[in-house]
Length: 239
Image 1 (cartoon, rainbow, N blue to C red):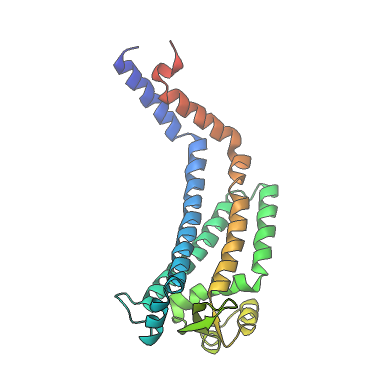
Image 2 (image 1 turned 30 degrees about the vertical axis):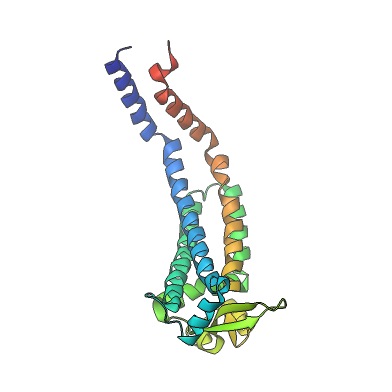
């Protein structure tokens, strides 16, 4: 086989691979997995920012003394930016997961199992609160926050950003479930607990969805991989 023949062979197989249903499914699910990763990264960045003052007491004292005014952007402004990113990615994953599931509406097993898990999350007050908090931050107002320092049982100072419960209740016509969660919190409470709790639920659902790709597209994806292997082997593996 000449070099020209080899390139013709690769071009022909690549064209087949690009149009292969296994590839189309892989690209679709890869995009969904990217949305999951974006949520994970946004949550990580937010948590790191919230933890920062606890690693340096001087930083926490500076935040409180200057009411958040540090370097540009200040600590509170950066918190709002990261909170916005996190909440936006929360609802992005909700929408993308819903759209992904609609493609398999004819698959009774996938549809019923997916819906059962989504319905369970919808019944969790903290989950409804986090999802609806996105509407507040994006469309209504930024939650009123304050920096506080408390002392844990071991005698270590702990910095927290807290939100005003009454102001938050008045910021939106909350669903009954989300309102229930807010009303069950102290007058000033940390969002961190709610954000982490929602993250755990989102990751549990995503961990169930991810392997469904192989269940739904196993044979066609394996055929696509076989085509790729043939394309990448010199001469297609023939002597």
